[in-house]
Image (tube, rainbow, N blue to C red; front, side, top):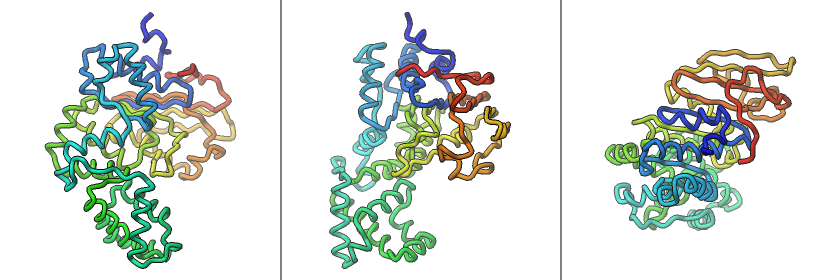
Length: 355
């Protein structure tokens, strides 16, 4: 029996659509990982060179498990030729090949969270600042948030709104700490985890030849847990996929577990805008108290529900996405109440088989 025979109809659609952008959304236990794994194996069986495939995950464990699963289908040797790993591991390799272009040695050190906090603590002390007002953990979080939104120390200091916010919080020296921290890291030839994303964006932005090289190398891109991407990760993926637009993102917009480090679930909601697709939505809700909403391609959930309601599980939006497939010129988005086993209008439906 072919591995494709293990898939239901909607899973098979997602696996076999290998050209152009596609987004798959389904809840936990619905087969997302199987779809991503079988999709890569199917691509290779169709003659796509594994060297041209980039698969991004959020954990090393997920990357290892997917590589092993693919290896069982196409062979371990072929599976190892896929560029698969976490955002940070993949982009650190890219940076090591090109670090000198952005002023770092190719053998730069990677600071972990404790290294970063220790350096920040030393800087706070050197600047004679109150470590109760400028707690290292708080400062580290502020710097991390800035980098994940691609805000440089210079931009941070030049932004009047940010400076006003810091002054109102009675921490007017945060920008100076950020600047000093960045200078110390550069002088030491070191990057922290957020720098791996920040400087990859800088590299792809400032060196078109580098961007072109990786666009040609990674002609097929797959992203797991797309709802957990932050702005820096989102922009890298968008740049890399711009040339061929063969991108598949998989996720669950109700299940962002990395919001603490800048993950933005709106990336998954805005996917169709970036992919220039014709979109049609069909919301189905069995709760008579919540009106059925039928909207067109201009639908913006924030115009109907505020962001707080949209992400609260106990809010008015008491629905669970069973399956979404976005692909060029065709989107069917099926939403069913959590107590409903199957919607009559669900064109694509994931079963809850264990992955």
